[in-house]
Image 1 (cartoon, rainbow, N blue to C red):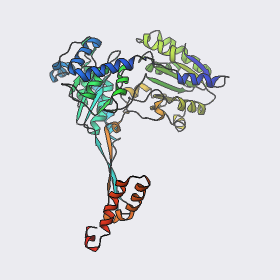
Image 2: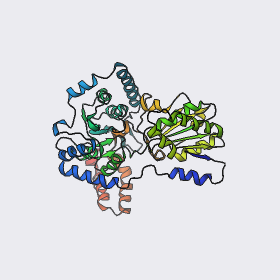
Image 3: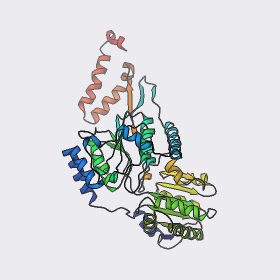
Amino acid sequence: MPVFLNSGDAGFEARFAALLEMKREDAPEVDDVVAGIIADVRARGDAAVIALTEQFDRLKLTAGTLAYTRAEIDEAIAHVPADERAALELAADRIRAYHTRQMPGDASWTDAQGATLGWRWTPVDAAGLYVPGGLASYPSSVLMNAIPAQVAGVENLVISAPTPDGAVNPLVLLAARLSGVDTVYRIGGAQAIAAMAYGTETIAPVDKITGPGNAYVAAAKRRVFGKVGIDMIAGPSEILVIADKANDPDWIAVDLLSQAEHDESAQAILITDDAEFGRTVAAAVETRLQTLTRRAIAGPSWREYGAVITVGDLAEAAALSDRIAPEHLELCVADPHALLAQIRHAGAIFLGQWTPEAIGDYIGGPNHVLPTARSARFSSGLSVMDFLKRTTLAEMTPAALRVIGPAAELLARSESLEAHGLSVRARLDRLNEGPQDRGRE
């Protein structure tokens, strides 16, 4: 059974704190296994990737078949039904339009002292995009990772998409094509992360790795960080729905199950100001579970990690939501914008009962690669910014250096960094040599 909490009950704070601290993925042996995989890939390159792919995905490859050929991609996407292709194209267009608006601008200005300052944005040279396989294969994740990178201007993009037993999802390959990615490796797991980070004889190393995956992928991303950049360490999926009694309980139930069906460690929470409505939603969840195709996954998720929390009012709901800092937050209330103004921490927010979280997973436009495990308190979802670097710019004129240089020299001396101060002093001394050198100003 899910946890039922009421903020008015004695002991609520302790029980709510326990809910926040609940560990939904406990695999202490994972990091040791991943360390061994990374070391193997670094030492043996292609041979290790091939062997590990056969071991974990039951797929025999060679160096020449690590990536799909263009002909293989063409053949696969030819089998995509017209309606599915149209839906994917619509999603790609909307995701591209949204992320194009995220592109930041360069800036330059001259301050009162005559110094010219600013910044510029440039993309990383190469990015590796991880697309989950296994329990489910997600063409939507291809779009969400590749399109922001493409919009940012990354020239070299590759996708790593595991294909257990050689089963190919044509929609994944079509999504890659729509995103402008030509190289798709049919490998996954920690070995794929290691190959993209360190390179092999066939796979060129990248500068940034993005995309969600299982515990092994997350551990591998954590270990290669520093050698390459990463977007985040993604954990199990989460959804928090704040709903009043004016909603259809069945709608809220399927919204909760939309994340519970991802995996058994996913978490779905309802916060409501009406206890009876909360019980009705919980009953609707149980009814839906009887027929849901993925009930073997969604059922354990709901019963082990689900929660229904009753609060006194929506202001209290907003305060609890900020403490949860959910990956996905639905505001199914009469005035979602008023409630939105009270909330600070969430990966993505869906306003009103006509905006189910599933719209965000596929077609809305904003990215669905989002911070989990309360990390929305300090991080954001994937965007073009993940594929860009900001470089600061500064240009001193002699006059500007004359004005601000002495303070820099003084601060360098206060930190006992002699050469720092001397590098400024040498130029100040030149400026003070005499009128014959003033023409340089």
